[in-house]
Image (cartoon, rainbow, N blue to C red; front, top):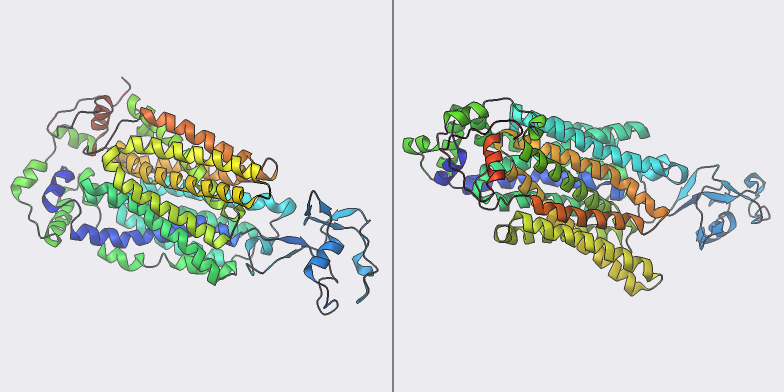
Length: 551
């Protein structure tokens, strides 16, 4: 079996051929970003009230303004109109153009003729189609949480599949599934069918994104910091594109159809992409791995000699361990790795909870929803460039701690300024600014945690590790829409939860080993050896005999 990092020393860790592959694979990050944040627009919160025929009939009451209808029909409670109720007088007694039927002393009742939505910003949303407001508002949160549950399922299923059939084929399967399920979503006539189809979209789109990250990191070796971080930049580009597509297409069905079709370029890219040589070597398929490595060398104008192959040959002990079949359970079988895994899972959970909590709440911020979403995406991209410039200088652990504490403190300060602002626009702006700073923090933690997790685990279970990390992240993302709903009852509670958990995660991150400028391990014993000897460089010729059991 071959140590691929040594071969990369010969052919280049990020030569022209890898740059070519990475650039095209980044295109898979765009649909992932589009789908993940799409609900900000297709389920956007717009003003609504009860539908009140015949007063809503412009042919009968052509001179009746929206504000007058609201005043005549909707109770004004706690300094705002309650769109879930109307005055309970008999609407059928209204005879145009007479308004003598209006009785604002009548007891309020729930909307009995459906709802009237404002369409000045969005012409048609899922909230409008299925009346996901008032007593049905929880259904919208359920739909969002089940989307994240789909990401959970995709991470586990396709994380294991990628270690079995390879990265390239897994990305193809997931891309096909994403396009089919995404187009179906755009034509779904029933709410629960929409929810089920979105579950599958999440599973497939997240799988292609996750496995693309694994592939990019595996083929770029010592340049994995830059290549891995900018996987998330491609995601953030999709995030920003949501604003453009939603601005141009205000009907959610056309919007969803367009964002789904952004996955189709991979069907052409597939024929240009070889499978990961590292994956072939780690599964004992040296001949295939060598053939692809020679292709890397040819396109990078390098040469791999027989001496290079001999130097890259690993020990028989390592080879025996690499040829084993591994599952996600192997992440918990050894003492050090088990502790690392639990800590990683908590980091992923908190990061994802805060990330989607801040992202999906963009519509609640003061200002324009299209601009706020785009600024959020730009804050992410800025964070990723900060990560690129600092990760190899200050280390993964220190950067994770710093970004985690930044996002935690920003959430708390945003809460404080928002709560005390009242009608003071200056203080409101400060609160929004801290929310954007929090987005920089959580973007940075996402940029670090993917790379950090990939480097903490050996090749044989790296896909599984990222899958389990992503699974833990889905627990956080599934919880985020319900935590956001708490602001309807206690306005300061959601961002306080985000802030406190972020600070706690930053403290726990101090227990990780540093992986900066360390060769990625290939076997579980090598990883255990590294956890114990945090600052020791790996000797590829060492006969590691660490037992695959607890100390």
